[in-house]
Image (spheres, rainbow, N blue to C red):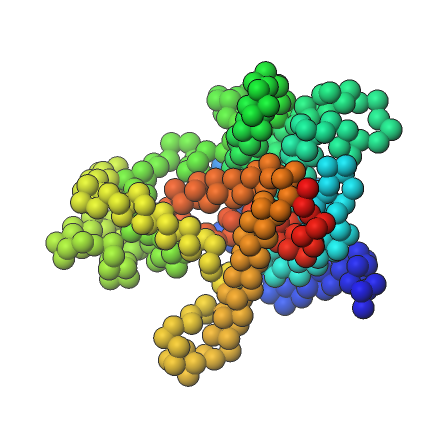
Length: 485
């Protein structure tokens, strides 16, 4: 049994079976799927990175080009586009996700490595691999055309490079064997590679540079303690340079085509000349924290009517406030287009609500969004209601859905709890691993904090943190004597 458990091939086969189950049983689609498909199809057929706007092919920068490029490659290889190529896209994503699982196992191995670069325990690698291949949340996203699979892959690879760079600060020959590399600068070389990889990840998800920001902070703490400010600057510049080099072609394209050197996708995903509803979004941030509410309000804007009776009661402090919202929505519901005047009224409401309860807007609601992002059943891609409470009523109405929701919630709690517990354990028992643990923990915290500023808290956005979470979680299976240094 131990030999089977430690066999990489067996683990990958198990992961393949789980992903094929989701792909064949629960293939899914998303609103973003249409955007990505249009961009990829136009790129392939018309050689323009564009969308169909009012029947006209219009160059855009709404999304980063990495995932549309992947789709265009699959379309070119299969000779199919859109729905006809979907199964091939999902199969390719399975391959990428399994490679990502191997990277997670490698990251866990690097965390468990001693100062000499020898893995402390091969069991850690095997445990991390099994935790990764059997994680239903990341596996589930192989069955939908979204960026999560690639975001996780590039994040895991970038984390490996950063951890190597951190270990080489104190021991330049960490993992270097028979190389002509200048060992005194080995950390800088690894940092440059980390920047390149993070740049590739940014071409899929624009918030990926947060990983480099976390790395810069941890490098600063480590090098300032060693009184090496100059080296901190060179390491930080190496990471930044690597990232910018990967993003420069995209920024150049935007400058030539759209007239601005845009390195990332616009935050609000707006088309040229389209009204950005800043007031409406500011109002939402004073009450919205659940994904369910996005379906009722956020994602209906400029497409469907919004029923004030379906808006949660916490969106109104008084009956008069509810009447004001109803009055604003009445003309909107007539033409389904939010005007600048209506948006200004929502902005005024947001300011008033924030002035009355600033702690609610800036502390309690972001905390609620963070809890929603992390402690959720993650069943959005499978046909399950997701309701657990009231227990007796749901048990009578739909016991199967309730049971599946509870199981998924428990699995999510296991992964999060294991990562936290093992990260604290590794910090206490291994001084050489502390910079790496600090980096991974800071990355998770920074990304979570950033996501709480969004008005639509989608739980899938924290799946990018799961490679770090799983790699740390596997450390609990290393003995104390083996990780102590």
